[in-house]
Image (cartoon, rainbow, N blue to C red; front, side, top):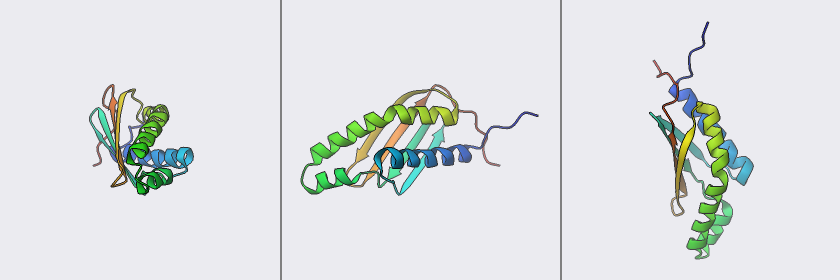
Length: 124
């Protein structure tokens, strides 16, 4: 008997948990919330409280440009691992990752563009 694909919600929860774990393990920082949502061949990922303590210190000391540069470098450094994690979970190649962060709100977002829509079933 063939097993059915996971639900969209199961894949989104697994992605959220694994991305939070990636931040915890790689940056020793725990975002308060990670939300992932699949839209056809795209995945939106939003992290709450994603700004690390060193970035916060830079902002508090008037070094917003340096803090933004640090954020860009961190995102670039994490991209290969994030791409691999997404591909492992959804079973579809990631063809592009687009990221941005707002230091004043502590939120960051990534959009993963997939080669095709992942095999998931809708909750019934």
